[in-house]
Amino acid sequence: MSIQDFRGVLAVLVVAATALVSGCGASSSGAQATGSASTPSRPPATQRQVARCTPRGAHVVVVSHDAVVYTVAGVLRAGPLPGSRAQGVAVFGCVIGIWKRVALGTVRRLEKVALNGTAVAYASSQVQGIDTSRTDVLVADIRRRHKLFDVPAGRIAIAPSFVSVDALVVTPDGTVAWIQHGGTAESPGNSVHAASVAKPSDHQLASGPAINPRSLRLVSGTVSWLEDGQRRSARI
Image 1 (cartoon, rainbow, N blue to C red):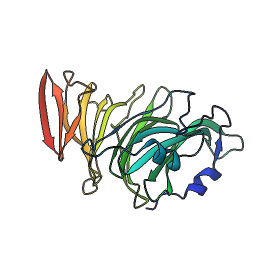
Image 2: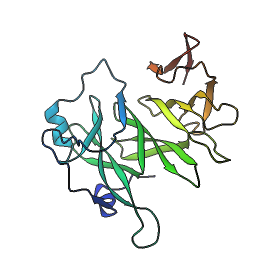
Image 3: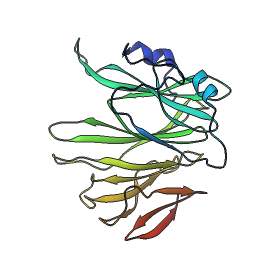
């Protein structure tokens, strides 16, 4: 499924007109998602390249050698009724050298973002019902302007239940892994998950209270994490 055109998303986004800054266009208002790039052997894009990719007032989340991911804050449609609005962000990607801005979706809350080359993955959450939230992980190829797949983080059935994605990595071909807290009856604590284009459903790799939620690493198609102080790994 093709990702929406840049202008199409702006048609449903009422962009906030405050907190505009110069330079690479980082916004200073509100809580922002954290991002990570997984190509340490190649230097990230320069500040001038990033500025060419991002509009004034955007918040740059993560930069790789090949691409930039940024958000624009605003008010989103929250339902079919007139005046149904909610604060949120539009997520965009831009390929260095091509300079085409690609809409990656609009979300109420952006949690984590990972970028590897032009493959991007992000976790977003929204409230569903009383004291219950839904968290999803979306994976896309910015260069191809194509959403690869999305997958729920956890299976929420009974409120109150919450899921947080604490760490997220993605391979150049779009295989994603993450550490989440909560979301399944079997693993109400921390758990490690993976999904891919070939197998877009959630595959749990490990679970337990001893998993370090900030320890996720990706090296050459192998993901690893700390559990009981020991580094464990799996091919993804």
